[in-house]
Length: 133
Image: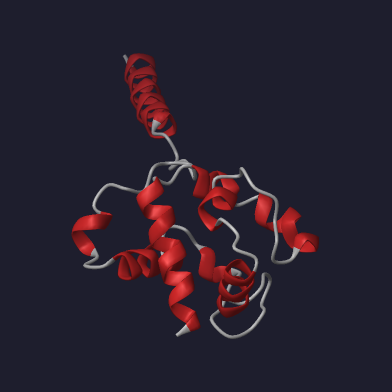
């Protein structure tokens, strides 16, 4: 009888453990569009929200200074001056024009931006260009 209770307890524990491990870890390429447009009132606000939140862009890019990547102002100025297509770059379909030597670092984050909708990427672009004002 003790063996049956012990075996039942082990099986119950194992099945709970199995269920916990079957839960998918949030995929960094998950589409971020759900709920964003309802929260942000303008494309710039949405871009800021994504840039500082789910996009995790602010961990490498600050407004006025280079941290890991170039500053937001530098990115905006170079893309404007060179008439670059930021959205195409964030989709992974254009060469880096701001600081190609740092592209290897940025490349690891492209799956995040590649999973975003065009509207989300355009919102990030709008937010970045807002730093030229």
